[in-house]
Image (cartoon, rainbow over all chains, first blue to last red; front, side, top):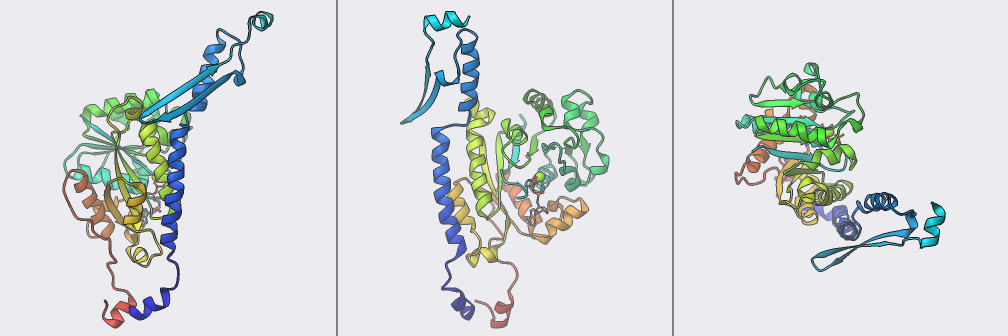
Length: 91
Length: 270
Ligand SMILES: Nc1ncnc2c1ncn2[C@@H]1O[C@H](COP(=O)(O)OP(=O)(O)OP(=O)(O)O)[C@@H](O)[C@H]1O
Ligand SMILES: [Mg+2]
């Protein structure tokens, strides 16, 4: 066993490399997971549909943003409504 | 009240169906009324691994669409009492698997079973999401390999954000790690991630380590869940896993190489 190990020892063990790479990528992906949950696009689309029942707006006029602060998550919703003139002219 | 357990992984081909079949069989052997459901619509395989493929008449989607009832569809295992299989549809598309439909069937099964085991398809699409949505507990099957570990971590994220328990703010889905296809000799040589490496990265409790084993292929060839091959290492590992799930405190086996290598035999070993 000694002899065998002697020939192998200079190599970097590939499992150690795998572990290190995994720790980095997993930490990165966990971070993303919190800042932008994957339901946001669908939420935005549905909100747009609801608002459109009452006011004609387009995709660019609705902004959805999620923030994390301490233990809280804050969902920020910004909808820019068209002014009175535009609204009546579109009808 | 029945417990719903999803067997999931993200990555394909890591041993979900093998694990579902043996886990369900083990629970039934220990006297619990158990049903195992194939959620892999379009690619049904669980029936083959359970050895009941020639007895499939109706499938999960037929029941959801009220084309057949559960009594007509459930296949009773011929070897083990208390064990039933609900096969997937081979022909329908995944759209047929509706959340309302799945919920109705699970509610009906809960009346008659102690454990409902859901064999998830690979991926993070509709079928996989549906398989995990109603889960109380999850067996996350992982191979000691980079892409499998990463995908398991993604699935853990989904379990904690998109399961019904997460959406309703209930107690989270209870997670268990099943490390499958483990080759202790390769891990000890540093060529493969070790049990400890994977545990450190994923950070969930270890339910069992299933060694890489010839017997798994042989038993799937024969349509016998490997847990029934009691003398094999993989069979014994699954048996321990089931006992642990049911609360027994058993040490993990098969973490070191079983056979003596050529050099060890030659030099008397170290
Ligand atoms: N412990 C093991 N030792 C050796 N081979 C194994 C082991 N576990 C699973 N396999 C083999 O790996 C292959 C995939 O197994 P299985 O079908 O259970 O995976 P799966 O995760 O359900 O795949 P899919 O994602 O396609 O549904 C099969 O050929 C099986 O025999
Ligand atoms: Mg499978």
